[in-house]
Image (cartoon, rainbow, N blue to C red; front, side, top):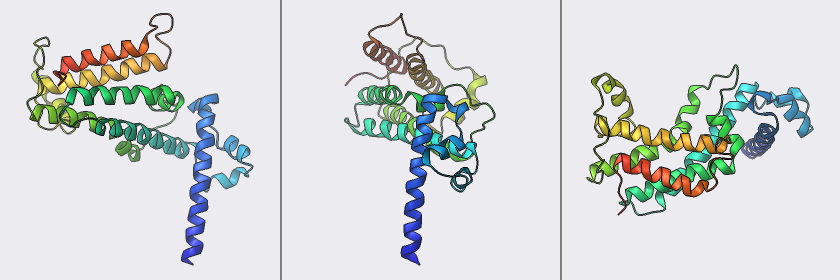
Length: 233
């Protein structure tokens, strides 16, 4: 019975992977709003009722694709962060920024599912949160470790964070523990600035405007790192 159950589990896992692979191809053609379980079943040569044993609804399939996407992006960021010296916080920041951009450009349709327009009628469930926070956790760890090491020297450019933001700063401190309010919001500015650039590039906003995009990206994220107070070793 154990061997039989293991075989069934293996077949189920393989079919689940095939379904999600076909669904990712659908994203490239139809977009998330056009994702169809019936179309996936048709491409697999499976009766439409059978696919519902794997994904009871389109939203369940979307959730699986979103979790897979966040995990793939998070893994790329984690790997980039581990590649350099732990004490080179500026180098780690640049590495994770490039990992985000490289992954987004290599997987534009999956990136669009994660960071593009919301899918009409879809509400991401709580089970997506853990995967969604993987890349953010890496960034928060860099900032916290750099602050603890005394390696953050932010320029005197930004006003102090107002008291009205103290509650939000406390929430964000779960990601950047031990970091004071002013640096919390510099960190948030740096992280959202990174994704703002990547969104512009993935969604074609630089067309006919910026040709040397990798060099422009490097300059931008170095500037954001300097705003945060990260200095090259």
